[in-house]
Amino acid sequence: MVVAASFFASSFPDGLDYLAGKLGFLQKGVSRSAFMKDYSVSFLGAGALSTASSGIIGITVIWCVFALLRAILNFSRTERKGDK
Amino acid sequence: MHIPDGFLDSKTATGMAAAAVTVIVLALSKVRALVTERGLIPAMAGVGAGVKSMTGKAQRFVGEAGKSYLSRMAMVTSLVFAAQMFNFPVAQGISGHLLGGLFAALFLGPWGGALSMTIVLIVQATLYADGGLIVLGANIMNMAFFGCIVSYFAYVLFKKTGFADKVSISLSAWVSVLMASSACALELGLSGTHSLIETLVSMASVHIFIGMGEAIITLILVSIMKNMLGWETYHEK
Image (cartoon, rainbow over all chains, first blue to last red; front, top):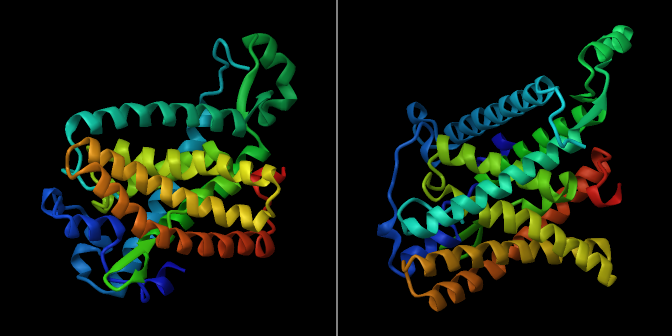
């Protein structure tokens, strides 16, 4: 789904960015660099392939978060006081 | 709708962070209660009585129902994340993307939905620089609290008023975007970034249309999940 959708993404700024530009406070925003800024993997440049890869990496990270969450919930087995 | 760093002043950002931490702690405890059950750990069932008498305590573990809830939560979270990556054009020069707050809350419940949205926002802010780190609390309040929790209760309210399910979904999806964007405008106004009234009016007038997109996409996604995957919404259970 991510791969398919990456070909259709609109390049217009979203509602908040548009207004920030229109009302003149866009320059207040601080731009940071990040590994996959603007949803493209830095070494793959821009384009659908890069967007799709960054999406797949993101989803992998999310699944890892849930695996971790489940492990934590399973290991904190002992009942604490006041638990129902 | 993701606020970047620099748009909010420090007092607003700090206040929102404190509110967001409260919401996350509440959501975590609700989800923990939902996915864990008390009793003997199945793997130790054979020696269960002995183990129990040794520790003298009941134990909590993730049961079958909890496992299926967590994997559904992972799926919903990935879906919301993927959907938020892609913008649909609303008018010339403006685009919007799915928020997915109501969608997540419909299948995970308000608290599970909020937790799912929070995970999406944290991943976006840390890995993609989409939404600032200092203003992460504000983004969580806008999209997880207003977008999931409040919009879910709006949905329940619409249902109780007697609206059909699809109408309630559309209305509350639309409301969720409007609420999240108004909260965002309010924070911008409070920070003195721009005049409150003008920000509020412009945000609302753009997001009235983005909200319609949200309503349509939410309806489509909900019907796909129900018909193709056989999922039940949280409310139906």
